[in-house]
Length: 466
Image 1 (tube, rainbow, N blue to C red):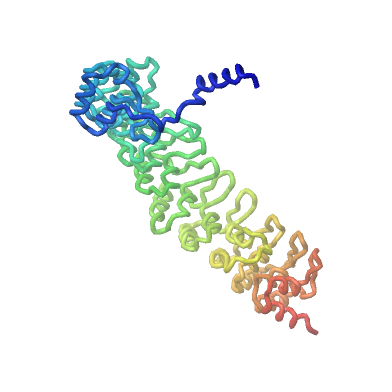
Image 2: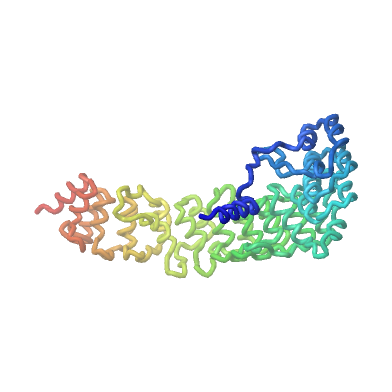
């Protein structure tokens, strides 16, 4: 390669910063070190002979605790007004970063002094103070922020004040609302209002301030959640009660069919039951469902929560209610048995059998429908391994052999999941024979042997004997 071209490439690399000496090889500016250490005497000596470029030099040493900062910004971050005054008097610039750091730290007097000395971007400093929860600084900076940016967006500052802090400040929110920030604005891809955000944070005092200012109580975000649904989903039941007291509707359905009763099911009935009773008293049906038709009882059945099933049935939930796809609560309970591959090494143990038995306890209960694998409710009951559940299914008239899409019948499944007593029960009911073959030419005895079920193989062999 020609030497001239190599020289040009090297020069270009340095121009682009590709050949720069690593920052760690540099030396920290002495003025910054003195400010960081709070060494007033050393700072005074350095300022006497400092040049303008020394005053405004940045710390470029990688790994330094003040990397990227100027001396005035280090002073602002520490809230060291004395050091800041000395630097300003010596001619240091009042930078936007220094103002932002002072505001974020809640150092009001230092913030005021930096603004007086012409520090720009008071709007950014205001946002920093709002996120940090410094109401006094926020209130003082409001006029300066408007002067700094003619397109200053106070509504967005309200969003920052609620969204970013782990525990947002009600005092800051109140200051912003008095300054006419709009609590109805929805932000970000989630389209959440400040009230949604405050509920998510569990900030009861902020919720109270927003409600008092007229925040829309039933605003809907991108997922169809109102603040009330958000409070229930997050287990914030006291906030949910506050929202109900303020007039939130308990009838709203979320974007995926979420209702207040359904969202309560993941929580302990003792904890969530009082809220359920409150919304039922307000006129919400215990079978309240969205377009998919899934009720709280179905959700409880799918989760295998017998306490919730008991509670909901006691409140009038209908075991015969059907979802839009025709499934009843019993289908949701039995779905756990087929949530894995039906011939996986480890079958589910007593999977939701107690819930299924409770749902089948009433007079003429629905026994369910075929699932996507064309398995009957009886087959899915067999897969739970529960003799009592299979006996109940048979007592309710489950008399169809019900071959699945691979030709396996009840006895094939019993050979894998059941008990010898269950096998005898099925044979006595004339629902299957030990000699039946599926599409893989497997008999129930073959299935038992492949599964390592010696007890079932022996029982099947005895039944197959003349």
